[in-house]
Amino acid sequence: MRPSCIGPVCFAANLLLAGSCAGPGPAPLVVPLHDLATPLTFNGRSARFAFDTGAGAHAFASWFADAAGLPVDRAANTQLSGRDFMGIPVDLRTLGRVVGQLPSGDTLVIESAVVADFLPEMEQAGLGGLLNPQLLAGEGEAAVLDLRVPELRIERFDVASRRLGAQSISQAQVQSCRESDAPVANLRYALRAEARGETGWLTIDTGAEMTTLDSDSPLVSTMDLDAGGEVMGVGGVTRNYSIARDLSMSFPGGHVTLDARVVDPVASRCGSDGVLGRDVLSRCALVLGRESLATICG
Image 1 (cartoon, rainbow, N blue to C red):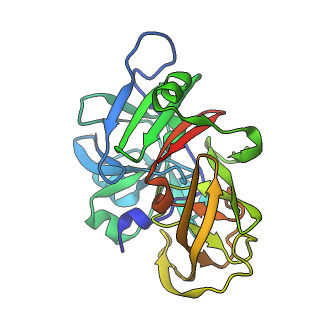
Image 2 (tube, rainbow, N blue to C red):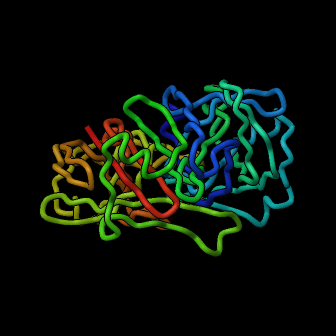
């Protein structure tokens, strides 16, 4: 199993980048990515961190937090929990303020995060955690995740949209998902999708290898499905999936024909019908603001 297929937990925390404040003049922060990840160093210890739009939290893997001697609040383990992308409960701990360094020498400050016991494959691959890119954007800014390059930029929302020719998504076609009672800040997005004359809502999830739909979603509920296989979440539990072949689907900024995974319904998800994965998003650039979203695909 590829570690990049591991789903996120369902909370979020604040992530601040030095020099990313809104205002005229400063050049954008540009972070080249490989497999949507970049190396980060904390306390002299380095690992790869993946940018995952489906993550409800900036989440550190326990193995890395322990190896780097990060200030984990272990007492919170009995009070805080989340769910992976399959709805399986995951015990969480909290992490205090830490400062990391990008390969460029830019400083990255994480004011708070969660820590989870991810699968051993993550440690074997040197993956230290998942970062939620849309939480990087300050007032008037966007975290621009261009999967076509790939790279992450922090720049003004209007500048990014003009540079890319990205289409602003109307409020009728996007849902901003926040949990006001969560112990940390959080933000995810879901897009309105259409297939077979039906509509549904799909979470934008760059942490998912494939687009995955709930079996009771009107997008696929009456389709004949082919046999599939198993997928494993961060909680270590596998779930069977079927495949919806040659599904023609439209969403703001794009139209695709794809083979989608179909699973039993999952609760506590932003998009009520499933997730839009990298099989679709790999041809897109996402302009992710605090309150606004723009996309361009192709």
